[in-house]
Length: 222
Length: 397
Image (cartoon, rainbow over all chains, first blue to last red; front, side):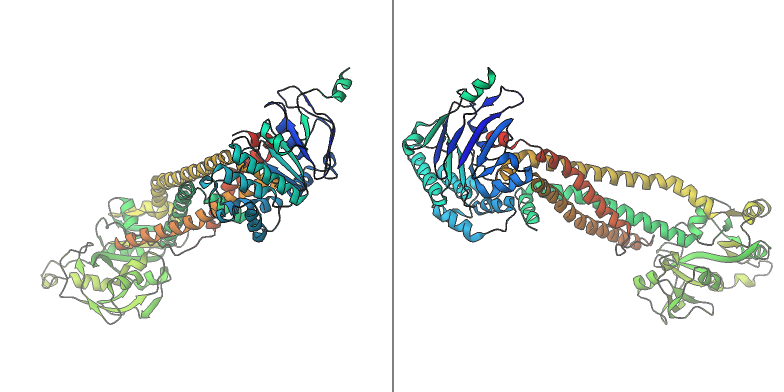
């Protein structure tokens, strides 16, 4: 479940961003549309607790983020949020397996080789465990990143432009995997995208078009 | 523990950079170690050799040469003086102890020094094997001489004329080894000690002594003197220099003059080692700084995965400390190795004793300094990692 209320954010150098109040049930899917620069990534970062809002409240999986200290927020993110960034962010210094193990290091948890292997197998990249990310194709890299995202059985999966650099077949595969992974964890899925193909895969998803001044913000102004 | 393992993996993910930084830091630490070991040992040897000698009296010439030849056995003596003059000095009320020295011969490059038993007493030398000399042409070997020549008590040898190894042999008057001194870490390690009579006997040309009207007078090279009272230092040297045809040199004065000349050298060496260490520290700093810049995306990813800023900073600091620790071990080992090699070279030239096998408490400071430098070098990148804007970094590259 994700719920926002009067959420707004302010970068030092650009005008304030206002987000409409939303409510996505646990296990539901939300598509964030909007032009680049409209605030899709900002919305995801706010929901992941990586940015602190200028005002308003985000509630994710029953936790009101403004109530958590910064350290608690980091611990909470490690266990609750699966973040799939657009650039994937796999470290070239480590093997595929090492990259997944880093999630345990970041969370301060003991490494679980069994879960890592299972997660890679689920996404059909079990035999790539010893490769370096530079030796992977775009589709393979995305599967590895997705394996890392679902490692901790997150309650929320946040994906930033997951189809941006993929051809039609790979994009469909990737989205199907994303859907099945979210289903397995019963996680709420949020996909920030400006790709028409995404909506075809998730016809029932909630859609929020970022960039329109929300009602509550207009009321506040006047 | 986990942080160390991850830091180690990151460190060796760029092996060339890691090795080059390791090499730089190791070189800096090794040179500091070498300077420390060498200067400490030279100072110790000098102090040991100088202890208790207030004045050296010998032939007119350079006072520095007198000290270097008489006390440290590094230079050749300026000339000879009459033994009767030395005996006259010994009878003076200011003199507590006088040790005559007669040099001129050598055994395969090691000096043969004729002296009295007082020399052994003065340097608190103990005979390790055998016993000290009691009759002419009996000799006691310093520890280094014995191990280098392989001579043992009971063996005999004949000296070469002159202080180099190439002089003509005194085959007609062979010495017998009666003892070997225990190692003292001082000048006596590299000497062959014998009585004055031995030296005179070796140089007695048959026949000349009996020539009527030409009685060859007994000579020595110099004498080491200890005063009864330190007050004598004011008047006694001047008295010797003005009323006799001998020269008096005070080791304290000459050594401080020498240190004034050489001290610049050791300061320069220390300075160079310091510059090397600062360079190494700077390179570690630059390396870490670049590593952080290169890995900003990785560090942002760690934050995205839920790592606290503290954990990310600890990773960087850990990486730097690992590098410093490895460099410390290698640097200390290399410093000791170089000191040992220099010690071997010096021993081959029969010069100052030096070994790589001693450990000084100051070396712990070197390790401490290395870790400190690494910590400071890691601190600024770690702080910047602490303050980075994760959300922005995730989307920029």
